[in-house]
Image: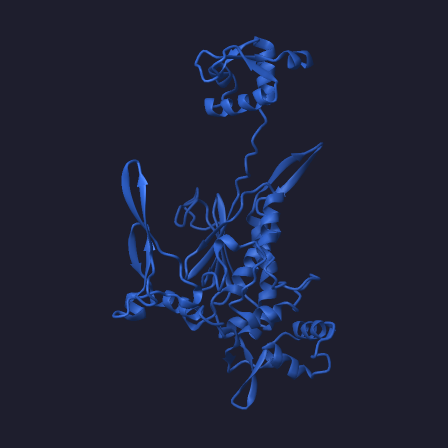
Amino acid sequence: MEPPVRATIQIHNIGGKQIVSASIPELPSDQKPCYHKQAGYTNGAYIRVADGNRQLTTYEVQMLLSARAQPLDDQQAVSEATVADLQPRLLRGLLARVRKRPGTPLARESDQSVLKKLGVLTPFRNRLVCTVGGLLALGKYPQQFFPALAITFVVYPGEGVGDPGANDERFLDNERIEGAIPDMLGPALTVLGRNAKRRSVVRGLYREDLAEYPATAFREAIINALVHRDLSAASRGTPVQINMFRDRLSVNNPGGLYGPLTVDSLGQGICASRNARLLRILEDVTPIGERRAVCENRGSGVGAMLAALRRSGLPEPLFDDRIATFRVTFQNTPLRRKRDRRDDIKALLVEHDTLSRAEISQALGLSEISIRKWLAVLREQGTIKTTETKVKSKNVRYQLAEAARGRA
């Protein structure tokens, strides 16, 4: 294999048997993929799936090889596109924000020079043309040159693709969203708003209406999908796909996590940019109606996403990194908060004097395992006591301690 596989072999004594284990550490990203030398990259690289092996596709091998260095796909020249294909409003805003940065060496540069140094324009056959990143960040209509670099937003009636609705409809909504990246955020939020439900929660004395999916979390997921997607020629036929089902919403983009990022490190402020030029441009591009730039490029997006979901009482998103694709899935079922059952148990003991664990379990409709935990808490607090010395006995009964009985 190349690089050579160095397994750590250990022998363990388990249940009187000797077990041999082989631990194989993951390779650094700049050494992937590991492949069989005689077969080469294309035929000799595999990924482990459950208890079997699957040969990597050509595109997956390309993704791993491109991650060994900084990809330059966003800096590629678009020979037919000139500065006339960029939005004047976004251009003016970009130049103004860049020149206002304290101590910037670009303050006295010409517009053309600034745009070249930011990677919006690049020389091509003795003239300046737009880059892929420049068009996606500032273009009037980037899909003129790259038709699939857009968003598709499909709302399905069931919990899977192809599940029909009440009237055999395949989709409840189906939108294609185009334009530059700053111009696609608003329409995507609009489609979400007209299809998402609202739920009510009581906080203190007041009822509060919450969106099915928090706008902040959804916005961050879309931005990450658009700016971190793979822009190589092999993936330019694939849009960012948003799929909304009855129980969840997923945002999918071509290209898995890049560089040192792993699913476990998401939300910890680690920043790694597959499309470094595109991210740099968008730091100083402001969508219409907003004061902040499209992205900060500081690795804070996932953290903001998690915080928004916590405020709404929703579970954390599911991240699925598949080398060639990355998916974020939001679930719309609120987290169930564990109810404190101590007062319920005390009330039962006030009424019945003594009860067994099984009787308390039946009265409250909870499992004996759950009741056992609450009883242990109450015993440690000195609130209840047992009628038997053996707490694990089936005959043990519980009653309020004298101090607790007085308070009750």
